[in-house]
Length: 270
Length: 270
Image 1 (tube, rainbow over the protein chains, first blue to last red):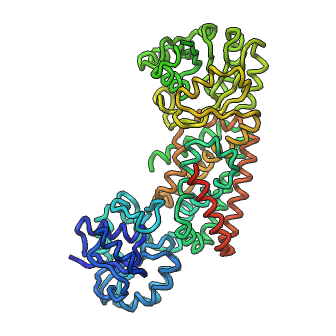
Image 2 (image 1 turned 90 degrees about the vertical axis):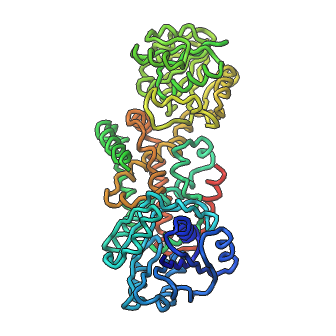
Image 3 (image 1 turned 180 degrees about the vertical axis):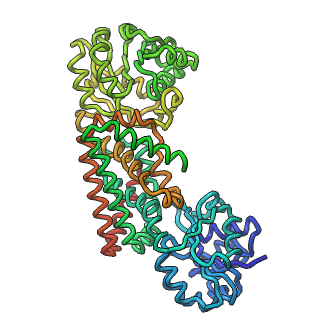
């Protein structure tokens, strides 16, 4: 059985550890900054061992960086030095351009670097959000040397996720800006609506604002490391909103009906 | 037991009939345009009687107009003539300014006019969407003469909804534009995202686009009868989106953190 070292036991790291352990896919070793978090993860049965010593990385076949993006960027040099020759170094950060560049710059030539991003999550922060089924049927983006990443790809499939290989980190960041970061921004913007109006809101408002319940630290992390793609995606979205509004003002029933039917058909295929 | 005549047996009219019948709050008579819909509603046990003859209105203590908004606007004169003296005439349309004006213009002086809007719904069109629990714990906006509306208010509470009295139809339309119509427009705008990006979407995108699955006829109905308030609400939303984006570009972590925390606290109270 291979050894996986998970650095950072938040919602994603903890859930990955739990899923690997429960399905007996790997022996999982965890590293956290605080001993109390390590103790709690052990007590929850998420992994075989957990502690605060980063040297655990040197025992692993696969090392997974699962701290918040901005913490992670700072940890990369220290972790990359410890990675065992021939093993795989990956991460689960939600933006990829800066991380992949830092991983490639720091990694030893005999290590396989694969940046990763599971498209999964819930509103609960830290170990409270651990769910061994979190990744089931969800995309897990991978960027890097696919030919050498078979052991990692097996783990990703093993926890129920669907690997989606991408060739370009910047392309990833633009895509997640559009389908993930923009829904967060829209939820925050909607929550700026007057309390008086929110009193009469129904399910459409609840659904559209659910992610506003997320941990602000996690959200800030991906918003602040993906500013360019988010600004571009927001501009596009605003353009489409303006287009719909002017069709409504013009009473363009035929045009709107076609747009609505197209959107409905695409959503039904999701 | 009072008699309620529901004109139009779609998702809302059918669900209201079902909720009243199941809880024995009223004897419900339905009127539909097509005899086959009336037969199906009877077979489903939603009501005591159903047919295509609008004269049923003249037997009712409460008449509920539940056809799509634009159909409803055309029916008001004919229905208002048939309403029994002393009875209540209401509707469940999702925009209120044009409807209330038409109801007041057409109603006989001895009828009580109360415009209504239950903030409830699902993605299934017509009788397929009938759910006797649809209104439970949902706001039901009422506009009109409250002192004479006690029998209607009892029915609204009886089906589990929370009556929210408003004094102004235009004010209602601005509010629902902000908390209901805008989430629909955002869902349609998001569904304009490239297929390639949608491939890596997660729950935030699914939640924010769920209402794009709704019946386009229903959606067109409220979009096209509420153009002014929707345009205004879209402009405000776009402004808040721009504000968030520029804070991200500026790396204003403190300002963003405050905004995110405020949004989270408000969403948690919903």
